[in-house]
Amino acid sequence: MSRLLAALHDAAPGWVHGYDLMKRTDLMSGTLYPLLIRMAEQDLVESEWQDAAQPGRPQRHAYRLTAKGIALARAVRDDAPLPSGAKSSAA
Image (cartoon, rainbow, N blue to C red; front, side):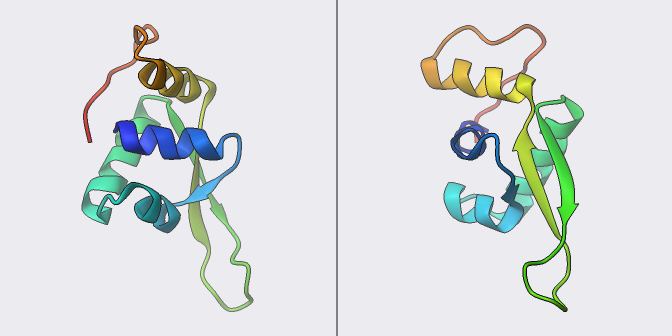
């Protein structure tokens, strides 16, 4: 999860599409999307559907860290104690 947190933190406060996260983290979709779902359940990430840049293309799911997610990303980056209620797992 640390690579995913770092990639989302680097993009904060902006939104990042799932495919871009796969490229930035080298995580496969079968790893990335379950992590994003768990992170959303823990209120670390929020997501939204965004319209495609080109007409006729499907909408894309985008993700960004919440305030709680930013605090966790900083704690992991700085090797500090985790914010209360935060869970960490390696990926």
